[in-house]
Amino acid sequence: MIVAWMCLLPLAASRAAGPELVRDDNGAAAATEAPLPFPWPEARRAAVSLAYDDALDSQLDNALPALDRYGFKATFYLTLASDAVARRMAEWRAAAASGHELGNHSLFHQCSGSAPDRAWVAPERDLDATSAGQMRDQVLLANVALQALDGRSRRTFTAPCGETLAGDGDYAALVAPAFVATKRGIGPVTDMATLDPDAVPVDAPVGVAGSELIARVEQAARVGGMVNFTFHGIGGDHLAVSTRAHDELLEHLAAHPDIYWVDTFLEIMTHVRDVRTRPVD
Ligand SMILES: [Zn+2]
Image 1: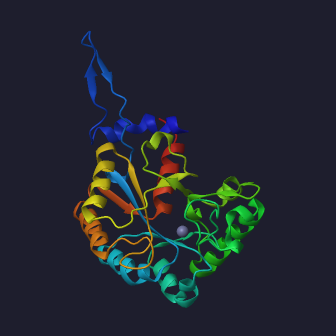
Image 2 (image 1 turned 180 degrees about the horizontal axis):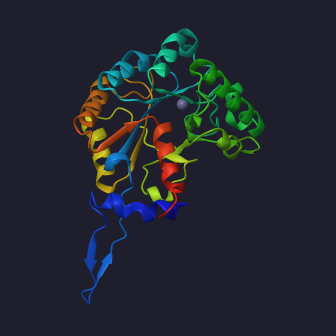
Image 3 (image 1 turned 90 degrees about the vertical axis):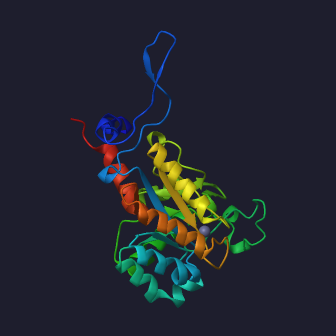
């Protein structure tokens, strides 16, 4: 399946820099190991997923208006038990109606209580004390709750804390069929050819400057890849990035629409799956 899109790459590469050629000792040309650029829509150089975890007030107050100002569509991964879901349900529903994705971030945000610095994990929400079957049931129920909010049946998932190892085993495979893709694990997306749609690593910036965020999307554009941002608070709440840094990133993305494809994680990963299964001429 991966081979299918690699065979299509000359189409995209003709409009963008392909792999560099080097000469060996005999003067023969050989491709370097650099990954090939991925064929994003309209020959853009990088896909950028802007995602916001945990259903926080600062996302509705600060991130959403900024996104709407630029016309960018993002993904808000709702923890359904979050106070801000019940209190501001009409606003989440309106965000979905305007084209943003409401992603699944589970009902109760279970993370491993035994991991370092996890004093905040309540015993009844400890992933170590929850079975994989319980996690499957809860994540699937969260999809029903989200469908009640937005009327949609296709969406993506972000594993709380990037963790899926429950008390008696890993629940990732039990819920994967219910999603187009899953954000799981931390780190950059380094090679689209080996990217697993069910375990797309996230870049979760905290307290960084706008220039640092911009450097990350510029790097993705250089290699024809993607940046998979997962923010938390924007100008408030936990693990925050300032509204200024966030705005500077959006301004940069908006200034280069020919380079960056900004869309929901659902749309980006639907495209990735489509390219991989496209028949080869
Ligand atoms: Zn979270």
